[in-house]
Length: 334
Image (cartoon, rainbow, N blue to C red):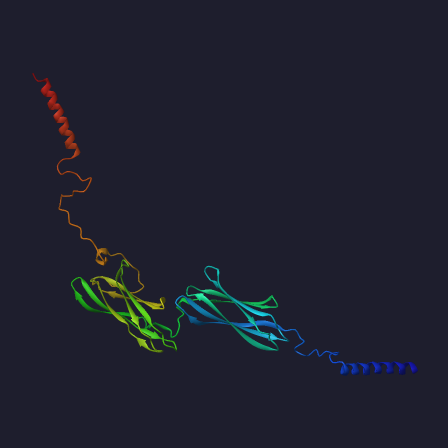
């Protein structure tokens, strides 16, 4: 009985001593539920990509990585973003951002601006590092970078199959020359003004693809939601069929194209995007400059290597033989 009392008294003394130590010496008993003690864990929840500005040759892609954080403090966190050409496989641009210390359970967005050339497509690779160790990698592809433009998004207006985006009217016809008034429609589908753009009109003879006329029409700022109609007059040889190509440029970069057909040949009709057939085009009709060559009279070819009329090589040989025979006969005669 005395032994049991002694054991109980010892246990009670240990409990009391532990309680006194916990009160007198802070930190002896650790609070395992506190967030600042648990190790921090960070991962990539999502990556978004948007165009954040353009110049004549580049597009700034804004890459935002949404970091999912759990636990205590996470330090030495870095986000690397690189743009790899889809066709070449070469790394074109690499950007890196150091992230401030992240604490607690929360989501943290980190944005990185990556400039790329306005050509082709890219694979955007986002790599997350923590304490020098790679934690996660997310890759996304972007295409059509060349069509990205600052401000409003202006394009050729597409009406449908029955009404082409490029139209024409015969303004005048004088002998072998026809004047076409070519027009098209531009619509700003964006929320901002488009800025200055230009439309190049190219008239190509259908069977040969020879350029018969070319002109450029400058277009001032197009308001959001507005449609404008740039037009120009061009002179082309008559009685041929043509493709009418419209090329939209902004800051020297092609952003849209459209095509239709003009039928001036009364014997044949064409449509845009149809098979091209050879119909015996006279190319000289479409030369910018050409030299007139004098016609040679019949039987009067004086070029090198030509024959002399009425006196060929056989006749010459016969004449030589006849002369030799006549000379021999004269020597034999008394």
